Length: 127
Image 1: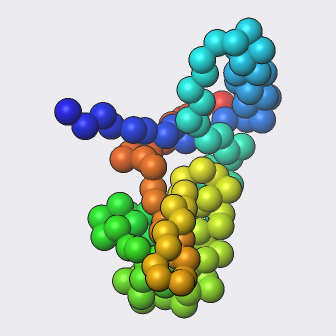
Image 2: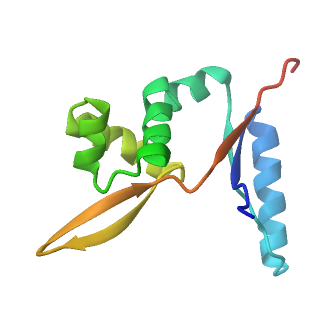
Image 3: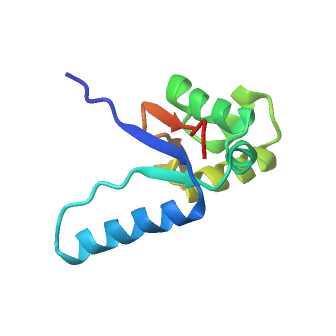
């Protein structure tokens, strides 16, 4: 049985986000095991600026086509490699994309990997 690995994306005011982070810090200080796979954005607009349709497409292509390098990913997407690299850097900072180093002869390549099967988004209707 394959376990579904999810990340939660939440849109919440900054105050609530800090409280959640403090709770995680308290648990960590106590030595409790904490699985904190969540991204919190302050607004829907911030969420949309970061998780653009192109970046979501990159993640989908990585999961579906399993490109062996950034170059191959850019080729599949039909996009300039430098622009794909910029998007991958942002996704990596968010923890949505990871890289595995692979040696091919004398060259090293970085294979992009999406460690999640699903992104769960929580958008409050009322503030």
